[in-house]
Length: 193
Image (cartoon, rainbow, N blue to C red; front, side, top):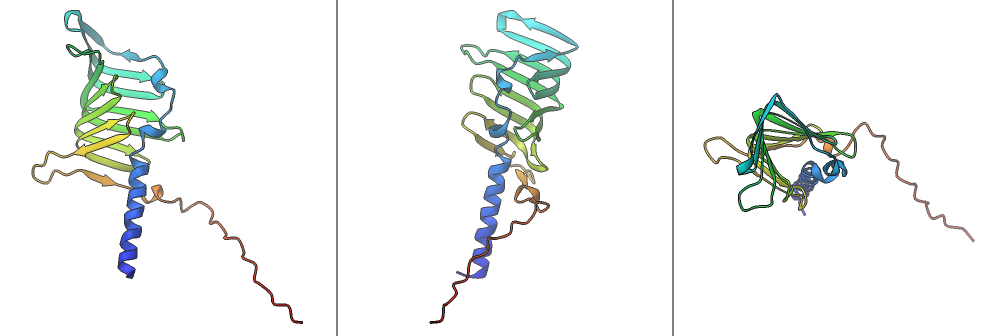
């Protein structure tokens, strides 16, 4: 195997591990958050009972455990012929943050953040960004199924618009951590007769 081929494989393995770490934000999120009460604070609200919809005018703050969503407006509704409940937060941008089990904060922002409570799917639309520990995924639309742990990031496909992933070196290895010393291997000594 050539040196370049080994180097390329090492880079690919490093990139894959970084992506797995980066994209597992909700997998290590505080487990009890979704079992906490959901508190919505807004300037005003209006309800359309006939259409199962409440509109909160902002600024709007949503708190559930360590989850925080900030938006200019929030619509909470049940789509027709469905048991699914949805929250749609809009803003310039609307923001999402959650404390992870390791104490770090994962954040997201977009023009629109949709959370489908039945499918546990978070969809970021328009200038979507997902951040953890300085690493980031950006695109026009990012969709994450929390239960299935599946992420899809998309661009508009127009012009220079692309999905961009930036992975910080700290996510690969912590250089400030003490170097581990390898155990010494005993040398066989020959005993002379």
